[in-house]
Length: 189
Image 1: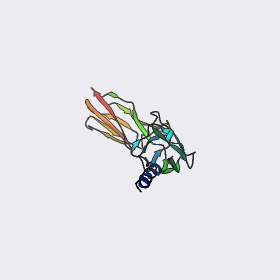
Image 2 (image 1 turned 120 degrees about the vertical axis):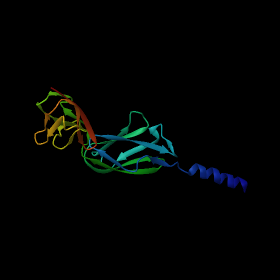
Image 3 (image 1 turned 30 degrees about the vertical axis):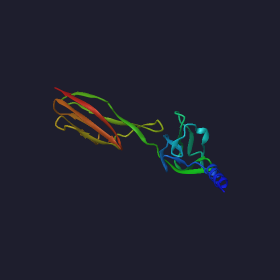
Image 4 (image 1 turned 135 degrees about the vertical axis):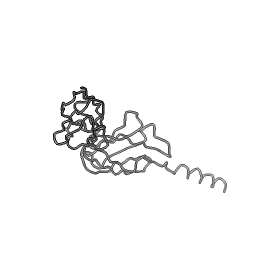
């Protein structure tokens, strides 16, 4: 009887599969961007992706490849839409709903990036952005502008002209979504 119980314990241990998990339940990726998934087996990160298989229901929307570090899966957004990324190991399938949204702005800046003018002068300012598809766009009128000290300069938002009123230093702030840029402004007599 003891041999039978021991054999049952050993056999049960051999038949149980490890638990496969990923660190994100769903993905929302801007077009042109990518995010990394960490795959774990029994709570330990997978260091050899040979233990894992993956596939995508709509391969045009997203691509999945090993990341540069060799232990993450990199999911890249190719076209806008929704699909499911599947990660498989030890007979288990983890389905990750994935949405690819419009390209996202990753950086904004102003032209000019620094302003030095004389009292009474005017200078036009513009805001430019770079998105996840590496496109540069003018976002001047779609941005929020604030002058730190309006006694030194003021901004005519209709023509985006900065008017120098008195000598001094201030900053011009521009925001678009979560991106920000700050322009130092110096006005001389």
